[in-house]
Image 1: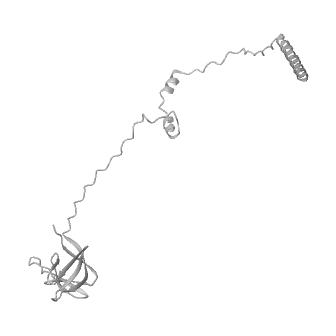
Image 2: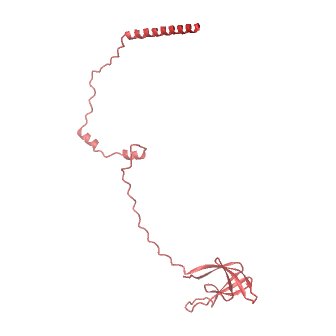
Image 3: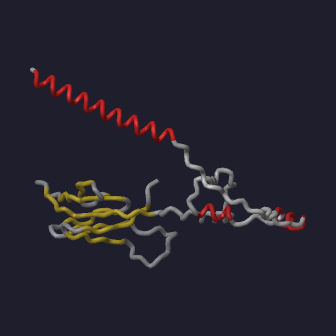
Length: 197
């Protein structure tokens, strides 16, 4: 236990001596006078007088047209410039719209696809043909009207023949008395018929 007390006493004495030495140094430096600031040399000449500007020169400076600094500021990124108060550009003059062309007359005929799909024969000997008219499958017999004015004239294994009525006396053209259309088996033919209202 004694060695610890001895060490504590010695360390306290050393600390006290260091504190006294620092205090002596501080007191010595305070007793001296502060260093004198350096003397500034004063110039004996008067400061330059401001340049003399005539009244005409002042008017010319303030009446000058605005410079291009505003337009240059638009091109560069500038946080102090806004286009909020700049009026929008004038709209370009628009050309007069072109008048609409007259509507084309509606076609008076329509095109229909016909496909001969085969036939069957009844016990009485009547032949019935399967004909695909557009997307609709129809069963027809010889002499019946298929579509429009086209009638079934002949039904055979490899073909079917349709005929249209003779033209009116008012239509004088060089058609035969009756038009005929041959549709081979499982092949598609197109015909034009008057459009139904």
